[in-house]
Length: 257
Image (cartoon, rainbow, N blue to C red):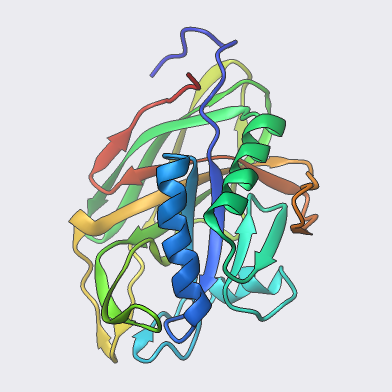
């Protein structure tokens, strides 16, 4: 993986943590609005659904979901965290979220871009990443493991609702593993961990590798205050960029047009 022109702008994506539950009606509408947003801003918003307790059989015993929710200092569902610098509660419409995507793209151009491949071998996920960095420094990298195509009840969506971007867990520490990146270099980063597991209706769920993917999130030191009414979060870093990589697949570097 190489970068031919370091002056070229990296494709800037926004990362949303969506705190949700199957018993939550507004959560369903937020998901539907995210589908609409994808048509408006293709590939710009990547999100991970963090499911909460009491999900009528959809048991997700990943304590990390609650640890992330605690940083918003509220208990409302849905709650959506945008790029680690602000959050909103409730089901925002697609136009409002498009404005959030545009704000990040225009005011926080990405210093990094991520390429790489992810393999699943004997229950272990191995992410071999190439992170192009325009600026040197200590960044943090998170790897969230997501699954699509889980059919289960959802208020508003019925008994056969298809849950996508369902977060099984994270194979890195909360807010990521620290990595030192050199400027104007494609830095090699390797991260591995056990494939997280969940229970559905009290029984162990076997994930289909074809439905698994990871979100690789790069955090950069600093802060940003949105002008769009988000409740601020000043945690010392914000999301510089994020990429989706299918398990047993790969992704390449991407640039702005």
